[in-house]
Image (cartoon, rainbow over all chains, first blue to last red; front, side):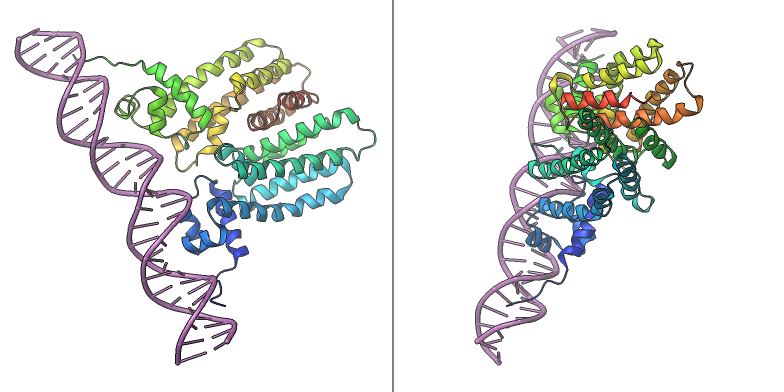
Amino acid sequence: MARKKQYNEDEVIKKAMGLFWRNGYEATSVRMLEKEMGINQFSIYSSFKNKEGVFLESIKYYRTQINVITSKLENSNNGITGIKTYFYDFLEFSKEGSLRKGCLVTNTVNDIKEDMEPTIMNVLKNFANEIRDLFVSNLKQDDKRDKLMINKQADYLMNCLLGLSVASKVFNKEQLENTIEITFKNL
Amino acid sequence: MARKKQYNEDEVIKKAMGLFWRNGYEATSVRMLEKEMGINQFSIYSSFKNKEGVFLESIKYYRTQINVITSKLENSNNGITGIKTYFYDFLEFSKEGSLRKGCLVTNTVNDIKEDMEPTIMNVLKNFANEIRDLFVSNLKQDDKRDKLMINKQADYLMNCLLGLSVASKVFNKEQLENTIEITFKNL
DNA sequence: AACAAAACTAAGCAAATGCTTAGATATAAT
DNA sequence: ATTATATCTAAGCATTTGCTTAGTTTTGTT
């Protein structure tokens, strides 16, 4: 055997995720990651292979964080009302500590080019599809809802959620709440 | 006097705008601009001062392009129906030639950091506010509309429009049209 | 105590970034 | 034709990028 790692991989990924979230994937350099994670480049590369590896692990961690509100929706069983609560929760989550950070997934979809980072893009798309599926199954919980409309409504809700991630960087709190209010008015 | 410019500034900006639109501000290098614009770095810097200058001119040109559909809305005078048409027009415009480009303004808001590029960010915010104002004045055209709701509805519409710019890169045509359909259902 | 293996430090790599500069070339006015 | 001046080419600048590598330090096992 030999020397032990002086750092905990989960803990440094937590810090890396914060930096990616605030800063975007492309704009975050390995030098910045060094400082934020508190370990040097050799350790970063030997633990996570490369910058993409650090990001992929960061997304995994992000998933566990957002899972707090996602699992709330999974277990709510009160249809559209549950989704609306999800939107408000998402808003709180995406501007954690009054910072305008949006959603890490949406930010990164906007940041990277599909042909440059296909692996990352795939992970992000799967992530988004899982949320859409969740919307679909929650919409189905309302008995009286038109079955043919459910997919359209899920698309609509995803669109509003994407918008909210962008808007959370530009709108004030009141505007964001107005938006959610109207979003659910006619569903 | 002396030698004449071998290129037309408007024409090269047209090409630059296309590149920024496809590629994003940060990811577009001056070397790429050289190739796309067909002139070399010296000419770029002497005509437009710096990369930011090229982008600022590109946004001006983008404005004239999108003005085709914006002025349609300005002159329509049929309230919410005009806005709906604007959304469909926007969709056509933002995926010009079956490319998934989104909206140059929204893309760039997501791309740059406010503290790094304050000048650009200001231009983009003004742009967005003009469109929101247009929504407000069009919503006022419907006599029976609740005056107190108009600002909320304008926020909501801006949110959906922002979402649409992101979604246009991820959704297919049908999903995008579904989205617009539901967006206007409850207004 | 000696060894082996993993973890560390720090220097360095080639490539790309935005921007500048030295010098050659073209051209309108005299 | 000469001259002044703007436009061009092309090389180069310092800085930053993601990643590697040579060499030192630590530490569990024998």
